[in-house]
Length: 398
Image (cartoon, rainbow, N blue to C red; front, side, top):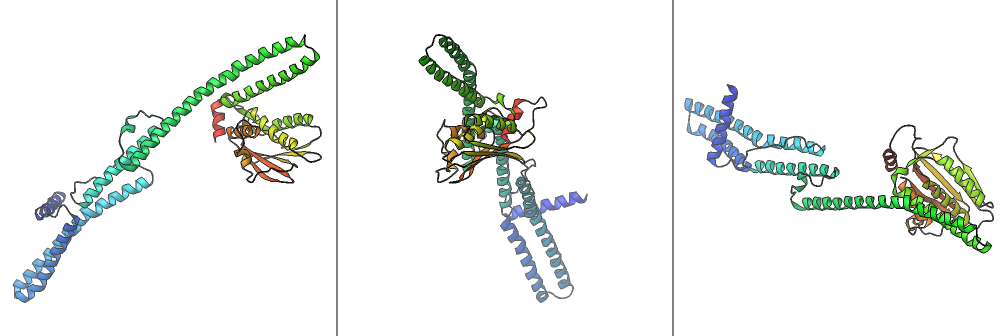
């Protein structure tokens, strides 16, 4: 009953504003309310000078009652047409700021400035939800999803369209590169080894009738064939994630330094390795990294006795520190040693392998007293379950 009466009264107030022609502007609504209060105040001041006795009393009481009604109407209009819509906008804006686009936006049938603001906010909110859905579709690589076709106006919409097109093109390139890598992996893993085997067999056949001079040439050919085989294995490992596995770096370093020590008996190699194995995601390519850095420290060393020390340290990651007593690196910026390495050179291969393994390599210091190189790699655990290779690849990415 009371709700119906109040509803009828509200409708009467808004009908009055329609009749007065102020319903399309908050400004005119407020001015109308102020004008009514002003007229009542002036009337209250005039009544005592015009009327007396009971007439003055009833006139004053009537004007006072009208003042109360006008004040109540002003509060009602301001609360309904100004405060409540703004509060709804504030609540929705706070949810947007929290990254939540699940609430229904405020709506209104007002025809004034606040109504226009709410409707503009609704359109913006709808665009934001569309952008969010488009971002989800892009993240799922669903570039043919219907939501992608919805137009977002203005500069932001154009930027989003360009980003979507660029990302789609980039993903297509990645997929094409993946197909090429799969073909490359097949060629170096199948065709090249077959050719190497044929050449090796023919070399052995030639050795049976070769002269001493021919033997020398055959030795050189055999060395080159072994290098081709080694490079094809390395390319195959880089092109395929199927070779990723936990590698014990302690064992790998001990094995590499022992082999290098035999090749360079005049050099002094020292190792400081932990008692327990340390595993990182990778494969035998990591041996090439350590071999290259250690051999560089020996071959480009002008000391009477080249010295290279290798130290392993484990915290969250594995750090392998390699120091030599060589002449230092002639490079204004020591980081340029790897960044500026020519493609295909030893340092470029080292940088590529370390980056592929999810690690980093840098020159810590270099001077006339020697150079210190630091290699950091993510650690993992030995394979003791049935996890897939993809999970080990994911460990590298992290």
